[in-house]
Length: 229
Image (cartoon, rainbow, N blue to C red):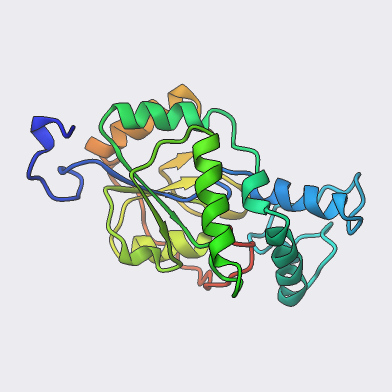
């Protein structure tokens, strides 16, 4: 039920609280799940721990691929092994999202996972099953790479390309902290702790002044961190 103070209000800072929420790298440990698959199938040493300095996995040392094509092949095979059903949730994410839902935040999952032709039905099913099994509340589930076309009160994302595109479109973006996105100004979340969740709730109603200057770097629009959009 929508509270009286939000009835009839449009999406925006003063409207009904709508959260566009990325999954991979924000709610789910994509890189850990892909690494586990590669170790389990003998493609990667169990003691190998790749770097995280670059968003595109193949640009980091430690992975068994060094090109977009090599990454794509590994990701495609991992999808067939139900990668998206096997991922570990980031600590505290389900509890935090239940808190947000209880505070009348409309949670819209927005993820770009449909880039391997012929595997879409499995990816959609595995994603929905994972969300239900983890107890993550949401009101809609959208698969798109064009995140800047979807308005929300607040977006949470880790992808440099998505952060740049959303901010250029005038959207409010919280950066979910990783080494590869630390050249962006905040607001920023490092985890799903109760403290982070309370700050996020405050930002829905009072966006921090002077934040979100679009980054000047051209971050591109690669598919490259593995559906991690």
